[in-house]
Each structure stands twice: as C-alpha cells, then as structure tokens.
Image 1 (tube, rainbow, N blue to C red):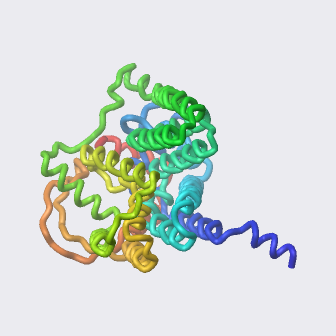
Image 2 (cartoon, helix red, strand yellow; image 1 turned 60 degrees about the vertical axis):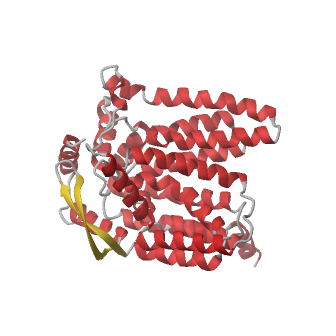
Image 3 (cartoon, helix red, strand yellow; image 1 turned 180 degrees about the horizontal axis):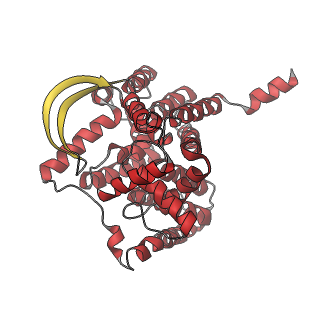
Length: 399
C-alpha cells in the first residue's frame, strides 16, 4: 500500500497525459520521416556532416543543430529513432507549457488548454516528424525555464540553440527577453536586470557562431540569409496570410474563437485586468504574425503562436470550461475532417498554389491526410537509404 501511495505522489495526471502524447507521437512517427519538402534534405545534409565532415545547409539560412541531431538519429535508427526523438521533445514541451500556464489558470482549465495545443494536427505532425519546428519550440521552452530559475548564461546558450534550429523564431526570443526585462524593471530587481542585459548579447554571439558553418559554406558571404519565396503581389501575401492563419486551428475552430470572444466581451461589464504575461504573449503573437505576413509560406511557421493564442483566447472568454471543451472537440475533429473553402491550382515545380477558387468541400483531416501520404511515400515503396538521397536531391532542386 505504501509503495502504491508513493507512486501516486510521483506520477501526476499531466505527467501521465504527456507520456501518452509521447506514445501517440511515436506511433504516428512509425509511418515515415514525414512529408515536409525539406525533411529529406535535412537528413541528407546531417548525415553528410557526420560521415564526411563537410557541411552545406539543407536550405538557407541553415539549421545546424537540428540537421546534426536528425542526421545522427536517422543513421542510428532510421525514421524510428529520428521521429522518436522529435516525439520526446514534443511531449516535454507540452509538459513545460502546462506547468507554465498553471500559474495563471486553475488545473482543469490548464489541462484543457494543454490538450488543445497538444492535439492540434500541425503540432502532432511536427512532433512525429524529422523536422526542425519542434526543436526550436523545445529549446525555446527550456530557455524560458532557465530564465525562470535565473540561469541567464545557460538561457543564452539554449536560446541560441533554438535559433540555430529556426532563425525565424528570433522575434519570439526577443519578445521573451523584453518581457523579463520589463518585469525586472517594474519590480526594481536591478541585479537580475543587469544579468539579463548581459545574457542578450551573449545569446546573439552564440547564435552567430552557430551560423558560421553556413557563412563558410556560402563562400564566406551572407547569401545564406536569403530565403525562398514566391513572386507574389500584396494580395498574394495577404490572402495566404489570412488563409493559413485560419487553417492553423481549422475553419470551425477559428469561427468559434471569434464568436466566443464577441459573446464574452458583450457579456462583460468591465474588462478584467490583463495579466502582464498575457500582454507579453500578445506582443509575441503580433510580431510573429507581422513576420509571417512577410513570409506566409507554411502553416507550420505559425506553430509557436499556438502557445500564446490558445491561453489568450481562454483568458478572453473568462476561462469558460464549456467553451474550451468545445474547442478541444473541434481540434480533435480537425485531425479527421477538414472543411475547405477553396480549391487550389498548384505549380508543382515551384511547389506553391498559383490560383484559388471558392468551392466548399469536406476532406480528410490534416493528420489523416499526413499519415496516408507518409504511408504512400515511405511504407508502401519500402524506400532504401539511396532512395532517401535521391528524394532529397530532387527536393533540393526546388530550394
């Protein structure tokens, strides 16, 4: 009996749920490396560094840390080990997220918010694929944990590692630092403020060091900072920005978010005081959206804002358990059923949509579609390592 009580004390419900997510992400990862066009190029370049010690980025600007880890794990255990590592990072990130938001919401609401994020199909795909999105998110959360514990030097290293995985998340790291700086100023903590000020340039220097291999690979030039994007006009940028923001959560979830916010605001006689952390979260969301407006390429680029969008919405609807539960159901259904408002004409050479027409249709959900494609790409043909290199070379032509 005493042993059972001891086990119960050490294993929490959120802990068990995150273990469940790890298992879920691992199972989905059994179907292959993933469908992202850059996955195979990352694996190829990561393995090349480890085998021949020569480095060239899988695509600009370079994703050194994630390329090395994905390359190493894929060499040891194919997509099984590589995806399992992503699953581990994804599950740990979810657990850290839960422990953080629990400071501002009660246990039930915190758990529901966490489930909404963890069961978002794009997050599930990222956490079950050999891709860099989950690496940057994980290291970013670890950096926040270090700042919370006032480990400013370690935080600088970890944030730099996060930016080595995805440099596009630099504005998010910037917003996090700004938030802590303002917090210390408000509370008059000069010692912590000074140490944090030192941590910022240190993080920048280490980030630069991570990109030295890319600089060298591009002939000692800054051409590695270029990025590939379609030749779109202003409307093309804006249309993609709106569409991809809607389909990060799904059509019905997005409509539900707007309806519940309007309803809650109309019922509220006086606005509640907005917690400081929510203001920083809103600032983070805005600056990341501005960047996405500039480069609205993939929906997965928006993954980091899930961690601020869902809590901010939950706060705006006054932590309504019914609303958040409905959002959870809508999120789960988005994995299996997807209502599309548009049909697209695609240029498969440029790998982008070139035209769209209004045409409402009901399709397979985002996650189901991803699993089917993985099955067709990896499991059915039973690809060899040589096939992987051929695929990555073909992908690289379009970078």
